[in-house]
Length: 227
Image (cartoon, rainbow, N blue to C red; front, side, top):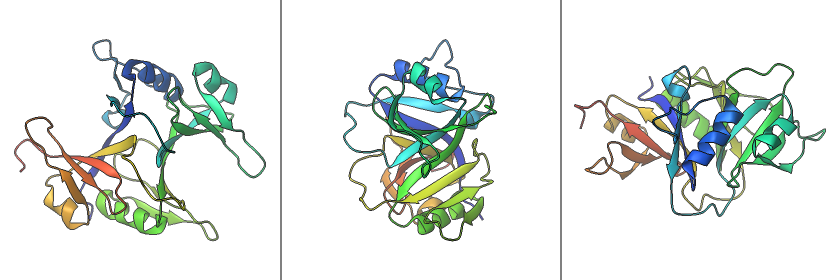
């Protein structure tokens, strides 16, 4: 039984309004006139917050987005830079957003209005990570024989199809610049599942900052009356 539900995504950036404009064009979301630093869609879970931070990007993002596009050139015109072109053995293009954040573009003949396809999390133990998050937020744990990655499907509230955990050799060294938020009836079941509380809600923030077993930050939002 899950103890939390996916809420939305957050991206650390230097220029929130500029990055909101880029990701809005790329994914198919819009920024409200009264708040140019957040992207919204037809479901609350499609919300993506652009969070201004002082620290620059220094290492490859351990969490990145994969998007659908009709042509890589469309992403370049939107402001992306190609880092690694699609090849016979790599059926996607690795790109960078205007601030150097990695993401992947998958060319498809049919391009939906909402183009976020999946969330990718680099992991030391992708199977354990996928099983842990399936226990926390629900969904179906999936794998493919002979492939080193694992993924979740049918996660309640998830506004994209796949949540993928991919093996990498390098350890996590800095705070992730992309993270996700969840809602939960109470914090303790999330901690009992194996999360670490990094910062409880206080007078400055109305949520609890936690980390999963590999240190990936995520925020837990509780009902107003919950401790």
